[in-house]
Image 1: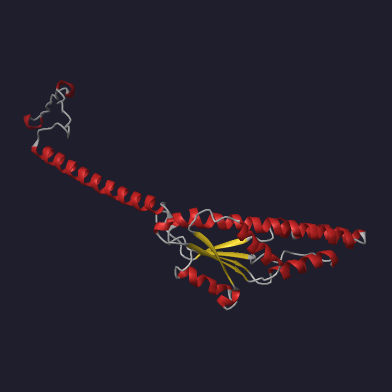
Image 2 (image 1 turned 120 degrees about the vertical axis):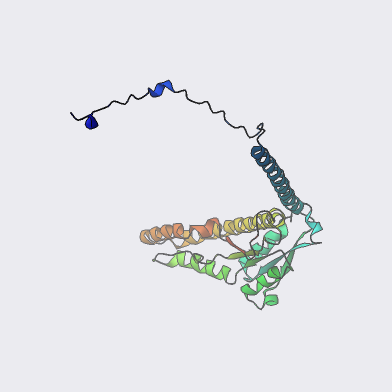
Length: 259
């Protein structure tokens, strides 16, 4: 073989013979490296500033929230609530009488009984005083409530067809309020007494209606078929017997939970 093409051997060293260098981790809190020291100071400075800003925000929110829970007389001399009876009949009697029997729960809350003519006999106009801040809420009994209930009871005693409640789409009582004025005051001092008065009115009127229904059914069930239909219709309009003066609530100015 020609010397130029002679094969040679390369002896490789064993990799395990090399020592693996030991790298110590850099600790940000006790390192003396200038870059690390600068980074540490910057982080501490930002942490202090962020903490101050966070506690300042917490303090301001707490002040606003707990301040709103103090005596509402600080915000107004009177928490006035309009009570308007558009019905002017038996349901209206139970409606207004229940509010007269229900304590306001706070010396600054007052029921203001208004006539429907003060609002041009228009339910939609009652929200203007709430919107303008003249009153904190308005409780309205809609017109023809008694007439619609009486029609249902008359039909229940005489009809052979299926009945439905006259208040499926529109409930007889409308409560208009705006908790954006002060959420704590509205939900603590204004709405609870309103709910209590409405519950009392509905319970008293419902008791009267149940007594009337029993009397009407006992005098009109002249056949087995008629009695069966009456019983079925009683279940159909059962809400009138349990809660005849149910209410819907319209919040015209929603507020933040912390306002």
